[in-house]
Length: 136
Image 1 (cartoon, rainbow, N blue to C red):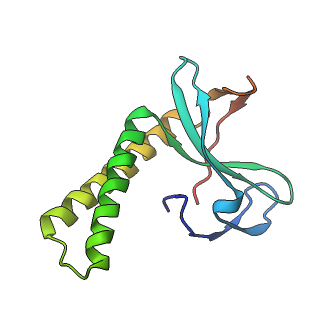
Image 2: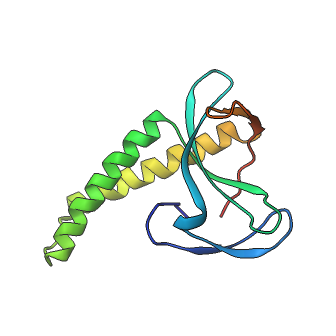
Image 3: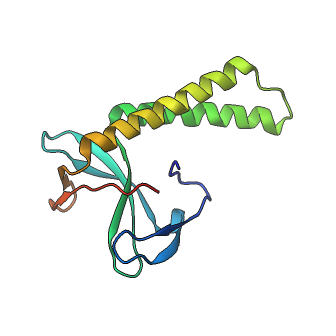
């Protein structure tokens, strides 16, 4: 599942206490900046369990994936306008959008593999954390 800032919600189970709760834009933190051990910026999306406060990291971006994300969002907006005007979306445009979205998902998956288990630093507080991703 891609986590976005829309109105989507999902039921999840805490990996620590097994509590089941609903996540949505109101209780998800998007694009919080951290630095990896080499000083590169990464942007994490996470939510906290309301019962035990366990933090669940669910998405990671870097500068490159954020650029792909912007392109994907622009194209999604263009296609949405066409749909709202009841216009046929050309197959070539739909394929381009699908390819961009797949590229974004692939990049994020590779980043999760790269950073899972690594130590990163919160750029606001200086706190170091060990990243362990939760698959939602």
